[in-house]
Every structure is written in structure tokens, then in C-alpha cells.
Image (cartoon, rainbow, N blue to C red; front, side, top):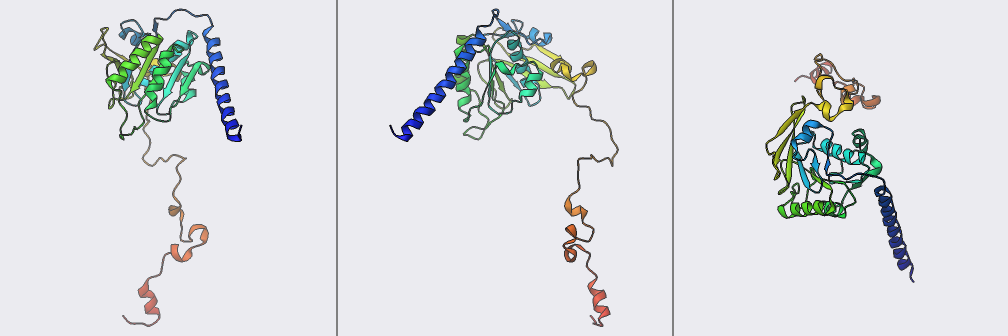
Length: 291
């Protein structure tokens, strides 16, 4: 056997060992005592009451559509945290590659039970979510499609055929599949919730599309419900800009190097270029040259 063949065999063997270790880890976690789950409740009564089953339904695909900073990602993290409280596994297909684990942990997510998948190609994100949801190993699979540019130069949109694949995978696997989208590229054919920020005062959730009823139901909540650890009083505002004097300058701002020149040049090395030049007329007058 050549050296190249031996190297390939060794790499295949290492990949196989990693896969086997992951399988053993999943078996051990799934062997823990747990109860049957029909829904995933976020713990926010106003949000859970919007859904016909009193929470996110298991075995279905649900779209969370909203602008950036509208609470869509945090709402998905609350659903993942609910699954973790039931000792279940979850997966997160991180298309934008922006999931921040410390922030997820602050919302109750158990990072030991969360598999983060970051496909290299945008076209692989839906495929990865379908495989994860269909496996049945994960109680909640999140597919983040809020950002990322495809081959056409636009944010990829979940077509009706792909939405059917996602819904079918969730039904076969028995878990919840959350699809995070932006208003510019919504998904087709699945239940849709829309999240909106209300000028820093709070956020809202509205059922835009649902075959089980409840379309048009809306809940408006303060930010403190979504982020209880912030310690906001009476609902509070996430951003409170205080009025400051007009001449107040933050300490971390520093003037540019060109503003620090005082006629001696940078480090005193360019006096001829940075120092003010004398008037040409004065020089000619002193030399007795008439103009």
C-alpha cells in the first residue's frame, strides 16, 4: 500500500471514529429519563397563548420572520432552552455564522446539548436542517436564514418545494423545526410568526399564517419578558439615550494624527512641510526685488 493510500485510510478511519463518538454521545443523552413532549412552551404566557396548542407544536415547521433586533433569534433560543429543560438535544444550522454561545447560554440554553452546524455553501443549509430534523435525534432544529448571499447575489428564499421538505422532515422526526427568515425573503407553505420591535419600548409577536387557526392574533410585550436578566424596571427600554452636553466627547475617541500637528511635523521630522511658510512678498521686499 502506498503512502497516499495509507494516509487516506487513516483519515477515513479518524472520521469514522468521530462519527461513532457522536453516536455514543447521542445515545447516552437520549437514555436519560424524560417525558413525552407535544409542545415546547417558551415560558412567556402571552406568546404561548398565541399558538393553538399552547406552545410551539412538535412535529411541525414554524417560521419566525422579522427584522434584525426584533426578537426572532431570542425567541428561538427560548424554545431551545425549553427543550433543554426536558433533557432533549437540539441543533442550530447557523447560516449567518453569528450565533454567540454566551448569549445563548444566558437565555437558558445548555451548550452541551446544542449541536451547531455551519455549512460552507448556502445551498447546504436547508439540506442540513432536513437531515437533522428527519433523524429524530433532536427535539428542536433551528434553521437560520436571516443573512447570507447565495449564487444569485440575494438572500436565499425557501421555496414551496423546500418548505414541504422541511415540514415533512419535522413530521417524520417528531421534533420542532424553526426557520428564521427576514421580511425580504420569507418562507412559503409553513406556519409563520412575525416579530417586530416597537421603538425600544418592547416587541410584538403576531400569527400571520396558520392552518390550525389563530391568524391575526398578536401580543405586545416589554423587553423584560424576553430578557429578564437585564433587570429592566416596569418593562423598561433596551436603549435609553441620556441627554448630554453638546461639547461632551467620549474618552475612547482620539483625534487624528493630522490634528495633532503643531508646526513641528509628525515627531518633529517634517518642519519644512508642516510649519507655516512665510509670505513670498515679504521675502522679496527684504531682498529689494520690485514686483
